[in-house]
Amino acid sequence: MPTRRASTACLVVICFVAFSTLADRGVTHKVITGTVVEFRADEPIEGRSGVIAVINDGVEPHPIALRGTTIDGTSRAGAIGVGTRVTVWYRYVGESRPVADKIRVLPDSATH
Image (cartoon, rainbow, N blue to C red; front, side, top):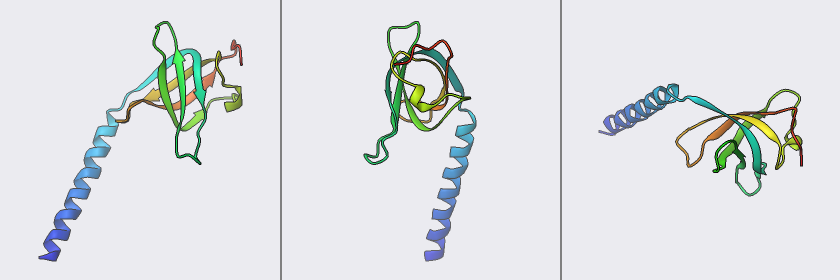
């Protein structure tokens, strides 16, 4: 009987991993270019991830989580601040806000 329970549990785990992998293939990346209105870098001591909020033509800022985000090209995270023009590649991963994959600081930025 314990072998049957272990087999069933193993099958459930395998199905969960397979469905998660298939669901992740459908993730589409989106891009937004705009002005940073809020930037908070990762705070690993407090267990919180960073956030960047970008506003473009609309009136609502788009808050995007920073988790393992790469800064593209010669840009540095120190170059990002309120008023900086950026392009952010992000995706939805089933969380409350999208997660940024890559950020590029645009050359015509008015930093800080």
